[in-house]
Amino acid sequence: MQDAKEEVRTRLNIEDVIGEYVQLKRAGRNYKGLSPFSSEKTPSFFVSPDKHIWHDFSSNKGGDVFSFVMEVEGMDFRAALEHLARKAGVDLSQYDTHQNQEVAARKARAREALELATTYYQQSLPKNQHAVEYVFGSRRLSKEIVRDFRIGYAPDSGKALVSFLEKKGFSGHELDDAGLVNRYGGDMFRGRMVVPLMDTAGIVIGFTARIIGEVPNAPKYLNTPQTLLYDKSRHVFALSQAKESIRRLGYSVIVEGNLDVISSHMVEVSQVVATAGTALTEHHVTALKRLGDDIRLCFDADKAGIAATERAIGIASRVGVTLTIIELPDDAKDPDELIRHDPAAWQSAIDQALPAVDWILAQYEKREDITTVAGKRAFTTAGLSITAQLQDPVEREHYEKKIATMTHTTLETIRQKSLQHEPATTPKRAIAHVVQAAPDPYMYQDNAFAVACNDAASQELFAHIDPELFEGAERRAMARYFASHHAEPLRDTPKELHQFDTYVKILLLKADTRYGEWSEQDRYFETARLIRQIENEHKKQTQEQLIKELRGAEAAGDEPRALEIRTKLNSLIKEIARGQRR
Image (cartoon, helix red, strand yellow):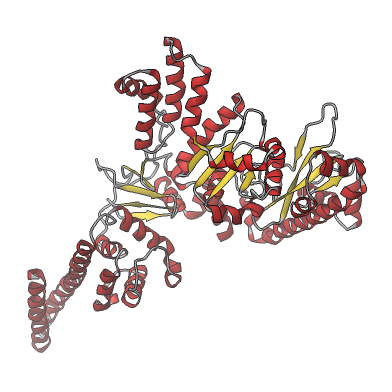
């Protein structure tokens, strides 16, 4: 079920799942809270969204989202997987061994059908004069952009595409899997310009289609429904075409319309994407963050656009990206129209993007008369509802000061009012199965690895200690790795330790949160101290074992064996004493 596990993991934010049980607060790149496994008063429980792991310093417990649910709910792995799969909306039956091949085959057939449909639509475009006039005349699209985006035309007849694909051997069920048929079994798209929706690899997974001309009661745009391949809450339109530009420039632009994207790419402003007819989600923002953490929005300044921007601010703050807003000149209703008039003005508008909260406050200021008491009250209420979404306390304070200045109100008054806008604390789920954890007797061994992660010199100390002194396969493997690889700080799981990936990530989290601010010299001395402790603890364990053996030899009257053990024991006691004096 490894594939199912990875699918569930990618669909869930670990901080959201754990946040149902533990009150978490942002701590840099991580989150922290009180341990659910001990009665501590100071937060020592950390969650790393980047590494998708958690670690509790008080009990030395840690792992991934599955191990957390297993701990707090008292579940085995299968039960935890089923629990989280329901939360993520993953159908585990698709991953049952006997169904894997069937689902894979259905997806492959759907891709094949979509690829043939794309070619069919492309070939249909030049055959229809009405469509040609619209695409190349009204929309002014170039032949190059039509080719690059594989734009085509869906004939205005009941089953043109279906008949074509049936002749290629596709069944109605297979065409339904691909999202190509309506509820009556006819073509999903008719009389429309069609634009393929592609995954990040450029594989067609669906279509968006725009009506040509005016058709009463017909929606302007029609998109592929949810299918085996297409999930609108995750799909970013034109990401496959835009990703190289986003990487190169370090930022992405999100617009509302797919044709805004196409027009922008046509004038070589190709870092532009859209969300394909759905509201912006954390999945969209997270996908773009992988390429660059600077995201610029170009939404309408109407009521719906402001509401969308408000939601986007909260998402951006949670995901950890910089969000700015692109303002268009008053005479342009959307990027497409601006590009037709002046392509250079579009890039200029992108370059002058405003911080999202500043833009929102400016919109509120236009809407309310802040010279009046009622206007001030409405403005501060709206503004503080936005600042409450900000995760960074410095950023939140900055905008509280700005709201106070704009309304000629004291900061103290604004802060008092802001308490009314603090997000309501979500009631935490009761933890079903938690036993107060006893301290891990080998925590100091993990601390030795964690403190050494940041410095090659500290890692080199492991070359002078026997790996067999460490408890457990993962610790012994870590000791061997540091003994032979100590050229640079450890930043990710090396290939030699992939089988212990979760353990290594926990060490890296501990290295960052506990030892990251220490000086290199302090980390070196702490590593040396802990290694001495490991050696001395091993000697104490050996001492206890020798004492047991000595008692056995004395009870059996075996004086030669007893003498041998006493000699070893005396030598060991002296070694322990020397180690304690160092």
